[in-house]
Amino acid sequence: MGPQYRMTAAATDLPPLSKVAGALRTTTERLVREISAPAAEAPPWTEFEWDIARAASAMHGISSLLCDGLRWRGPDGWGRFLREQQAQSVARYVHISKVLDSIDLHSRRTASAFVALKGAALHAGGFYAAGERPMGDIDLLLLKGDAAAAARVLDACGYTTAFSTHRHQVFRPKDSKVAADHGFGEHIDNPIKIELHANIAESLPVMMTDITRFLVPRAVHPGLNAYPSAASLMMHLLLHAAGNIRARALRFIQLHDIAQLAARFNGADWDELLAARPNDHGLWWASAPLILTARYYPQAIPVQLCARLGAECPWLLERRARRQSVTDVSWSNIRIEAFPGVEWSRTPREAVAFMRSRIWPSQEALSELKEAEAQIPNSSTVVWYGISHGARILRWVFSRPPRVQTLLSVRAALASTREGEAIHV
Image (cartoon, rainbow, N blue to C red; front, side):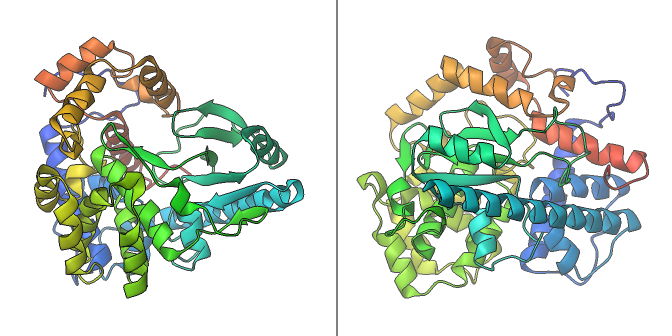
């Protein structure tokens, strides 16, 4: 099992991580298939696998979709879990809608302008019913006004600055307390953060791919703006998925987003997308998320599209993408890799630079890691963030330790069964 990880007295003991990893793969792959192609009969899982299925469902943001889409029932606890998760998602959706309305109102008054990104845009476009797609936070792209003006708008909406990263500035509700442990998955009491972006870019794996100019509407108006086109929304969904695939942090709901939007696309939409040349390099990075989406939604993605983008994609990345499953590149992959996503390097020099950044991270990267620890309830129960970076490197090499977020989700799923409830409410 490798190194032992310190647990609190209330933490759930785990079986060998190999058993957990196997159950995560089994349940994840079956559940995501249920979204795209529902089966008639329930899977013949053990009690342990049904528990792990809860963790997989929550981590991938698909509990509400499963609640409405499954053709079988499963154990009573499983059905109760899905219904409670759906209820929590609906409650959070109602609250998020009120926050977005408040942001729109106050930004119109101050002549500030934003684009409401990803989940907010998909809900506004009618792709999801209330609570069908979970939203962990609100993402905004600042279009007009400076960061100080945006902070004043959000202050009027009841938000204050929490911290900043190289990607965005994070705001939290003024009345929010230290994150409590509400089990796992969706919960109305989990604070709804706002992430304010000055630009939209991803490191793939070290070179930045910036698509900000493609997301700015032709005619910006005060308040919340929509994406300029369906193609620009698709570009953002693909880049966000690419970044998470690279980091092994994908959620299946992201592929579902892509498939839902692709189902409405016509030839002109695809042509507009393919004509874009971010960083003057085209959309080579879009190949991997499209290949993965096509694996689970074969009718949604044109075959010729994957072939065309595959020709621009680095050979190793394209080959790996055709072999990888959702489990391999998502939170369901419980093991930490030493160099996750090195195959996204376009040159040997990029690969070396990426590996160097993992071995000798910048002070900024270490600070962001420390901030990430502070945002994860109960992260101190796993000895990972608290050890030196040198010790982490040794564990990458010799033991492939478990990822903190995944391990905590698994523990919470097992604990919820032990306590006789599907989720802490």
